[in-house]
Structures are given as structure tokens and as C-alpha cells.
Image 1 (tube, helix red, strand yellow):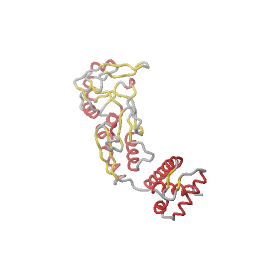
Image 2 (tube, rainbow, N blue to C red):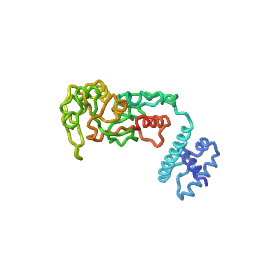
Image 3 (cartoon, helix red, strand yellow):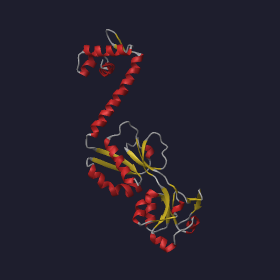
Image 4 (cartoon, rainbow, N blue to C red):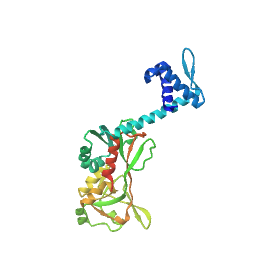
Length: 290
């Protein structure tokens, strides 16, 4: 027998409350529905539906089997939708949550490329880092810095790298470049998150207390302050990577680097990610890779 036809007939009878309604839904005769359900029960070796002259009741095993059938049909529907989407131009709105520094340094300079590839996608960007509210706020995905501890989300690594110390070439010309770890204590340091900077020396991690006349609470502001020549900053490599590559910032104490924080994109878990979201994730990976 065609088991799928039997499963469809059985599910329709349960959901329509009888064989007549199931036949109407499926566009077949009542006898065809009856035969398909009967053959399914014979193959399974158990009764799924208890029939009387007035109504149809589902048996205990029938309830369990119905739940399994719905799961199978849900997965089939998801596969079919994914296949259909793969043949279509991605379209619709994508809601992205990301830190301000990421939008400025990584996303906005390359966004014209994404728009050219996917003109039918509308990107709605919210600046922030409260990704714990991702699902409730209706966001499709979020860029997150640091370790991922929330198991509610699926994720994909964007980039990782060391923590680096850097300043402008002009700052180092005026104040000299630190040659040893302790040298940073005599420099004006732009402090973010903590005034205890970590370094590697002789195979171990050491902390140095730094000081400066500016404390910032934003990666975006930290980068701008460092570019303006206010002092030396320490942060994740990916915050400064474009400036280091361009020479507008210069790294010091390179041999004393410690591991930095990772950056990932997270999104609500689902077996089949919408195509519009998948192409956005792929683009985020592309613009943040080394």
C-alpha cells in the first residue's frame, strides 16, 4: 500500500471529525478514505480509529500515531518550502540587531554589495546588544560579542582573534611606543570595560593596571577616541582590524597578545531557516572573515 496516502487519510479523518469531511478535504470518495485508513491499520496491526454509527473516535495508539504523522508532515512541508525558496529570489524584511561599532565598521561600508545582490530584501537594523530578547522582539538575527551561553538560539561564528593594543602613529611619535608590558602604565590609556589589561608573558597571563583621562562604555566610541589620538587602547582585534590594515592605527606589544572575544550571529532555532535570513547570515560571515 501507499503508506503516505493512508497517513494523509487518517490525519484528515482526525482533523475533520469523520470520513465525510476527510473525503471532502482530500477531494476523493468516502470509500477511498475508508479503504486507505483500513489498509494503514492492517499494516500497523492495530486500530487507530474506533468507528460507531454516529461518530469516529481516535484510540490511544491512534493519538500517538497522529502526533507522529503531524511531525512527519511538518518536516515534509518544511523541506518543500525550503526547496521552493531555493529557486526563488530572496525577498522580504530582515530584522537585524547588532552593536553600533559593527554597523559602522563592518556592515554599512559593505551594505551596497548586499543590496545589489538582493534588491528585494529590506534590511531593518536596530543598534544594541540585548540579544536575549531576540525572539520576543521579532528580530530575525543578532550579532553577538563573547561566549554564547543561551541554548535557545542557533548560531554561526563570524570571527575571532586576539586582543590588541594600538594607537595612532602620531601618538607614538609624541609619546614613544611601549616596548615592555609595564611601559603602558606611563601612557594615557583609553579605558573600556576594565582598567586591568591582560598580556601574555613567559607562557602565563598577567594583568597590568592602566590609567587614563577617558573611560568609554562603547566599542564604537573606543575606536573613535583611539583614532583621534587620545591614547592607547586595548580591545578585540576585529574592532581595529580595518584601521590597522590602513595604517591609521599601529599595534604595540604584539608578542604579548592574549586571546580576544569571539563574534557570532545568532537566530531563533528552526529546522529550515528562511532564505532571506540565510543570505544575510552568509553576507555577515563574508564581511567579517579574515
